Amino acid sequence: MATSSNLSSILRFYAEKQKSPFIDLREFCAYIKKYAEHHVEEQADLVKYLGDPTNTVTAELTGLEAKHLAATIPNGNKKMIVSVSYFTQKFLNQYNEILKNEAIAYPVESDLPKKFPTYVLEKKQAEQYIIGNIENQNTKSSVLYELVFTHDLPGLLVPACVPIKVLIETSQKKIRKLLKKDEYHDYFLKKLRSSNPQKEITIKNFFTHFIDQATNSYMDVSEGDDYYLWNQLCYFIRQDFEKIQDRTGEDTNVLQAIQISEIYNTYLKQKFNTNKRREEALKELESQLNQSPYFFSMNQILKFHDKNGKLLYGQFTEDDLKNFLQTKTKEEQNVLPTLLVFKVASGTRYYVYKKKVLSLVVRLCNEAHDCIEAELVKRWYESLLNYEKLPEMTDKNKFEESLAKQVEISSPVLYALLNATFMSLMALEKSDIDDNMSSYTLFENGKLKPYSELLILTSDQVMNKAKMNLPVLYTIPIISWIISLFRSNKKNKQKSSEVVEETKNPFEENNEDAKKSYSKAEALAEQAIILTDDFIPEGSTIDRELNYLNKQWNKMITKEANFQLTEDVNSLIRDYTRRVVRTLSAVSFTRERVINLAETLVKTPNMQKIGEQKALQEYVQLYILRLVSNSKKK
Image (tube, rainbow, N blue to C red; front, side, top):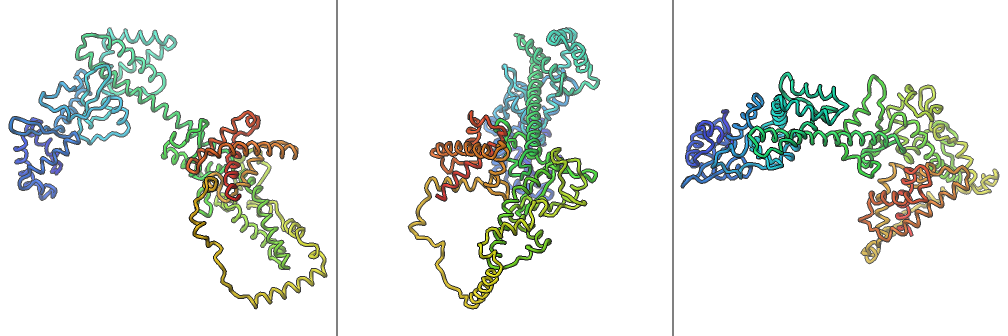
């Protein structure tokens, strides 16, 4: 044995040297003292055993006993140590022998010496142990387990260092040995054929392959017909052998082997169902990434739900999600990946499918058009009112720069998308776009179109709208010129006489008012404002999203019918919100609660008549949040 300071290892070494797992405590203390004196230079930790090691050894034995690695038992007036590691090694060797000779019986509790303290065994239900360790087993442990079977079968002694696959392989070997006997071979083959009259050839091939296994080793029965027939065969064998009244040791071994194999079959079934759920969840994830609004952050992806309202994340693991995203975002042979990633100024990363980029840009441009136009009109109006000229009013390049800055402020997602590195390569790839967008292009001569074309916004449009808001006097040239002279003089006087005045802090509050607690409505409104950020894309507004979603579910052609349908839906939401808000508190008003409220309303008969249920539900969610958050302003 290599030099060690581990008491359990030293115990096993001493037990093997003495050829007995039962060790006199006093003799062992004398031995470990000599051992420490001899090896202390190699293992500094052994210094604790120098001098009189009795107290140290006794204390460590208490810790080993708690870990089921050793035990102390009385032996007359003396104390005796029981080395569990000794038995662990012994039964490990026995399992290795079973692999060579399946006639050797499984080790059971009755194989232990009478004076062995059985309380030191770690007892586990066989199913719990096998399924729990099959994928992640610590084979370096020296713990000795007793696996408890059903139907009053003797428990199996299994060292933790025996791999689960070895346990399964030994069970198959014992069942194979049984089926090689003529009387059992024909009997169980006939049973399988009777239960599956349409699978004669499949059954024959399976049976022959299992029994005549060239290497006489483990056979993979995890898929297809093999799994089904193996599961059925185990059931038939167990059913017959459980009826035996006076069982022999071999009968017991067969039943133990069958239970091990059936537990493994249960694991395979669970694994199949888990894999199926994971695959379905990943397909649903892919489907939702292809749906509006087309771009999603990791935080949003983690909150995707399936059709039953269950979180997708959890049905697949974090590693599954990472692998999915890495596969989808991996570039191959100088071709853009199917899933693209871009980052906004705040640092948030968004995922968008390549074929949806065009649709997304068009949508964001349409949404941004009104708010950007309104902002520019307001700015230009104020300049014209003060008889000032902005460079972008007459300079085309300056106008484009002005639009770019405004897009960056008003629609950071659109700005980040248009300036993403992959956009320059999108012009070269025309195949991966939605069919309904095939006639539209973002590029001209291989370059992205100007912002004015993307937003369908010209300087003339902005100027005309800004001028329309000016007072009538500003449209008469002579009067306009005279007013401009007075304005310029007034401005000069204001600049020369400008002084700094101390003013009261507008945010200073009366102490009495500051101490007032929020009412229930105010607390709800605060929570609604916080939740709103979780429901709308970065840089967007709740009104902009409501407008977009309204166009998705309201397909009425005439203006009047369209307006009436929206009002009817809004009225339903308002009435519904008034009723439920009485039972809500800020604590219970969560994201899940908002989704649940919207889903309940959308499932009512009147709402069910409207198409585009997904867009309608998202609209209801946002409208509820706006109603609740507006209560703070009242």
